[in-house]
Length: 219
Image 1 (cartoon, rainbow, N blue to C red):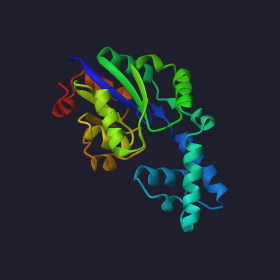
Image 2: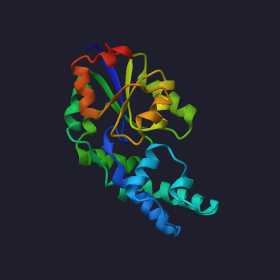
Image 3: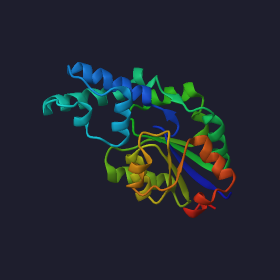
Image 4: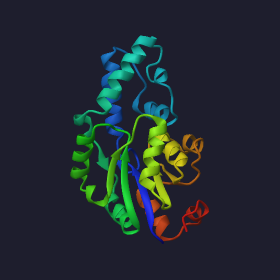
């Protein structure tokens, strides 16, 4: 395969962040004194992009807002980010991607220091040419991804709807990974129609020139 720029999303594509997201939810919902869904239902709701009101059922608006504030604060905290783990064989897959060209990492989490510590602990930081926290603003997020892409064709590995949408708007060839935080149905709504079970299955598809990748312009 010719030179390829790859942008890997930290959340779901590289790392399993579900223990962190569940812990942040539980702490926040207990802090506002409310009951929420069990873990299985929490993930079903989260991966469908459900509103926070559905995660705190029958709560008043002020309680939902307080839940959201506390959850987001804890979700980005260093002690909970320490729960993140790379998916199995991530290092092998990342080496293959880097051998094909340039490999960048992006994240929706603003806690750069904790993310760097996690990458060091996972022993995968050396596979990325650049590591970047994406802006919260949607337009600026698209611009940041365009800058990372440069003039080369770019493969974006998405685990969340927010990243998938921005990468598609930036002109990347976007592939969804089922290890991410959104169901394929939600990712299809923002233009993604190629999916793989994991980072490992994606690199296998690249190696064997999967027709699905050729269809989206990755010969």
